[in-house]
Amino acid sequence: MRTILDLSAEEKDILKELRLGIQKEFPNWSFRLTLFGSRARGGAEADSGVDVLVEIHSHSISFEEKQRIRRLAGVLSLASGLVLSLLIADHMMLEQRGDFSVFRSIREEGVAI
Image (spheres, rainbow, N blue to C red):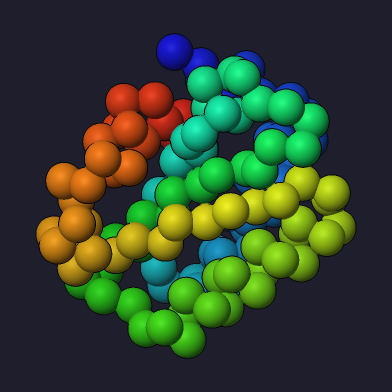
């Protein structure tokens, strides 16, 4: 299983900037980032996206809050040349959809950031 130490400098940088950006935008939030997909498995191509689960430790967040996080990801994607693809989940979503195969896959192969 890969760890954050196995990621490239570019991957580490964009994930660090994502974390810092969310912390700046929402200073009172508690959240967890998990890299998943081909970059977590180590099989990414040069043009593969950087798939990240953003798990917000709150019962629910608004559509507008999710959009603010997605805008941040867009800015970081343009600046870095790596495409951030986010799955944003709060407790309500995980309660309703936590048994979906994508969440099982993330738990099995994800790299905690």
